[in-house]
Image (cartoon, rainbow, N blue to C red; front, top):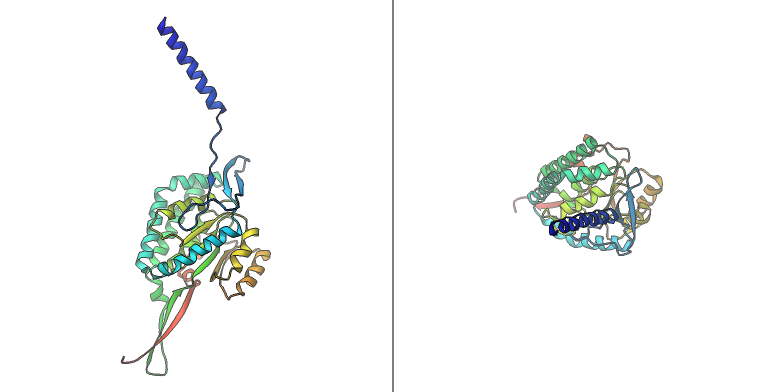
Length: 308
């Protein structure tokens, strides 16, 4: 009799667990911002639902506000001195470490890019090219100074040297059409040259950017060097381009309604502007070049008397 009772109880338990499993709702992940090496929620408390092509909700994504940008800019400014003084070799090591970690988590990135609409082969290709892009700029970390610096001829008994220095804090508006490769193609040349950045990720394809921030957080990159926001261009571009303690703007796109006010805002404190074509093939040679490092550098000229 006891065996029959036990079997009855087991069946009842299995039935109850099956019913509970059917009724249970999955925990929807809310992707946060990445500011000053931490993962805060937006101060506004707002978010938007990211959906796939079939209309299914993939995740909740924060809608950043002006206050979030100010916090990110403050963190970027605080990190400028230490990062600019880091040796080129050390900056290259950190970029290479990012590539290593991206390689180790490639399956997750492929899955996220696929959920946003890429085919499996397209997603794998984008992840692989993103890894290669980080290694490319890591290799340039201790070489671009040699290529672009100069000893200038002068008509006096002096040495005249031209050397590069980072511009400072860069507002970076990432491309809308690519969630990972375009983002990394813009971040890497900016930070390998000693700048710090505040990035606005793609609105429609933000998952790669947000997960990449988890790579940054564990890659030995100092807090504040890269800060990643999610949200709408319409709300954030004016703040990111008009802030008087931003030194440069790196923009991907060709929307006239964005470009004109961007250039007008850049003129307010003579910000350096680096433009990337909206129709660019981010896997092409055109999208990687040491000249992309140079675009966000200032040239410092030093005179020194001969014989001293």
